[in-house]
Length: 104
Image (cartoon, rainbow, N blue to C red; front, side):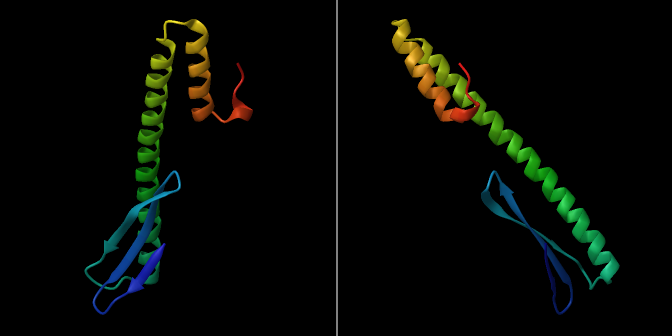
């Protein structure tokens, strides 16, 4: 957590990363200087809020990834030759599921 004491106010910041992708930062600016106890409380609240946003965005990204995998699997299995469709579906699964976790 970032904390800077400016001339007339305090700035608190927290980095937002979703699945290791940097999205930006959340900055909280106060109207006046804060006491050390208040800084700690604001930092804790900012961190908790940022983690909630991070968890929500990660869930959205995960749902999108699963939906994309289902679309690709569906397309692969539409092939009129079963053997080719299954091969394509397995290649799709290998891209989305780590091989060590994949059991067919």
